[in-house]
Length: 252
Image (cartoon, rainbow, N blue to C red; front, side):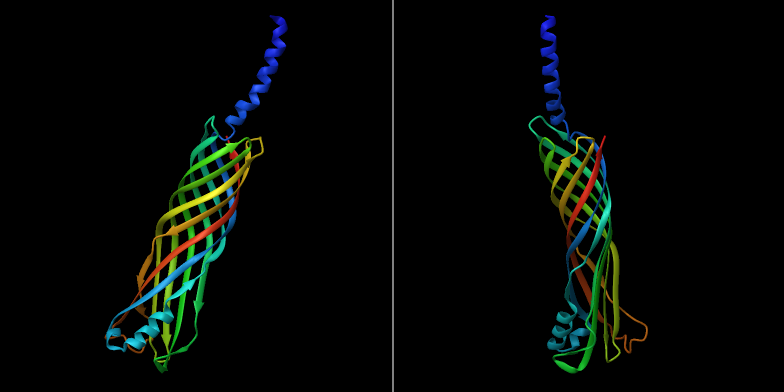
């Protein structure tokens, strides 16, 4: 019997890494992440009110020149907190709460340009989009092979956004619309993580964020040469962006 004890101890030592490997990704984790984000934001301007008395050609000139595609980009960094459970099959399921501070923006100003249908009229169009704080809560689905984890995530996201649109003409027509709001949306991603074996892991991750539209109207600015009868403009602006980031996580 005593002769078999060394063999049993050896088998125990050989089995323990397997058990550890099976549970390598189980537990709570916190981390910090940093990366770069870039996206698209389409501003569509529609005209109403006294614009109806103008020619269709002029209305088309203004709405098409003022509507534009913007390409916001910039940095994204923040913190995350989550929990994963690894099954014996290698399947990993979990959830993650994520905060990111965004510095993502873009703007354009055309300068005075003549309206093709009325060359004596010139307009200067400007548009901006800015994205700030982001919160997301995503489910994680993955497969672990030893220290390697391949995963996908998907869930709800909320982002603070500010957009504006302005116009100034050589006829003294001055309007500005600006709107700030918290936009809900959907976020999904793919990633890979490597476990260093000491409760720390490093991951690379791609996320795609699709947000609800931001809608707002313009108002006359002080100094506009005419304000009545009212010419009205409404802006519908959509936003989506992609983020590539690296995260260092600690599991406890």
